[in-house]
Length: 180
Image 1 (cartoon, rainbow, N blue to C red):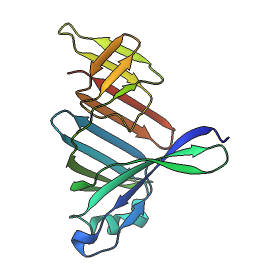
Image 2 (image 1 turned 45 degrees about the vertical axis):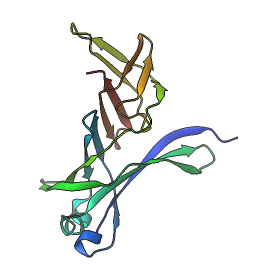
Image 3 (image 1 turned 135 degrees about the horizontal axis):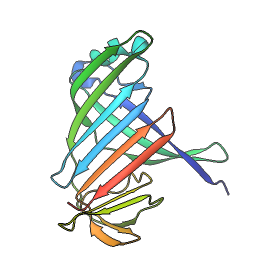
Image 4 (image 1 turned 135 degrees about the vertical axis):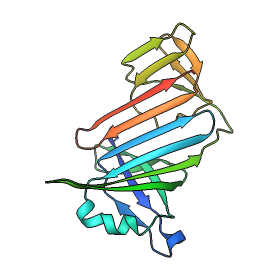
């Protein structure tokens, strides 16, 4: 039996709204913010602006579709989750002396019609504020949504906000979940 060894992500920039085909872009970072109001935002940084800037800029009315996959020890992969399409709200083309990247931000309303219970894995930080709100940091769980119940070492709470930060180059990823 193959063991799960890591996660990989891909991002498609849709083109139909601009009469273009979809493109898959390389990713250097992912910032995903979800909250109980339903409006979520996603920012993807494409590190290869030299080869992708014109294609991305040609799709200002498109969307971002982020998918996460579990990668196994035998080299196989399985789709963990494909997020709803985030409509592009801004595109920023940045060039420096030795780098050229493109940042794309999108928004979508994500609702949670069937709240479930998840347990945080890799718990590394717990903070309880005087007003009783709790923040917990741990490994990324793309299946967790606002409205779900999160179990952690100090108890459990209903998730109000989720902030996910993934940096591809350093294989660093964090998820911070809060109750309010």
